[in-house]
Length: 243
Image (cartoon, rainbow, N blue to C red):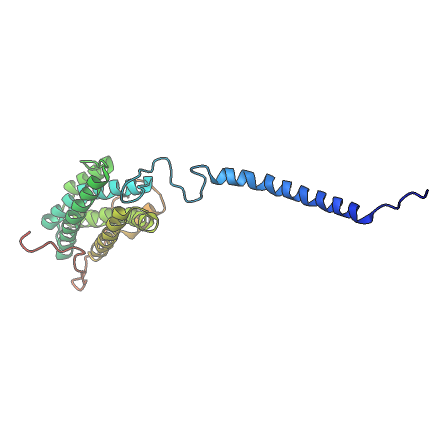
C-alpha cells in the first residue's frame, strides 16, 4: 500500500493556533501587571500625598494646608504693620497702603479662620520668627526710612505668597480652599499695587528675594520722594458701614 500523503491544512491550522496562543499569553503577561498596578491606591498620576486630609468639601492637600497657614500668618503681622503705617507713615500714599493692609487682612483673617474651623484644621496664633523680626525693624525705623522699610518688607512678603495663591487656585480640589484663594488673590494683588504706588519699594531687594538670595531682604536703598500724582487703587475689600 502507498503511504498517505500528509494533510497540508492540518499543519497550517496547528501552526496558526500555536501563534495565536503565544500572542494571547504575551498580551496577558503585559496586561496583568498593568491591571494590578492600576488597582493599587496611590499609583495614579494625580493621586494626592499621604498628608492629604479627606473632608466633605473635597481633599485637603498638604499644599492647601500650607496655604491656609500662610494666609493666617500674613494677617498676624501685616495687620499690625498696616495699623502702624497709618500713624507712622510720612506720606498719604504710605498711610493709604496701611489702610489697605488693615482692611484686606481683617477680611481674609475672618475667612481663613472660618475655613479652617469647617475643615477642622489648627492655625497659628502668632507671627513667625521672621515676621516678628520684620515688625521689630519697622518699630525701630523713623521718617522716610520707615516708609522705605515698610514698603519694601511688605512688598517682599506679598511677592512670596502671590505664586502660592496662584498654585493653590489652579490645583486645589477643595471647594472652601478654592473660594479662599479667590479672595486672597484679589487682596494680595491690591496690596502689591498700593505698596508699589508709594514710590518706596526697593525693587532690587524684591528681585534678590525672588531669586532666593536670602530669607530676609537687605535694608531698603534710599528712594526718591514719591510724587503726589500716584493713583491708588480702591481697597480689594470694603468693610460694611459702621465698622
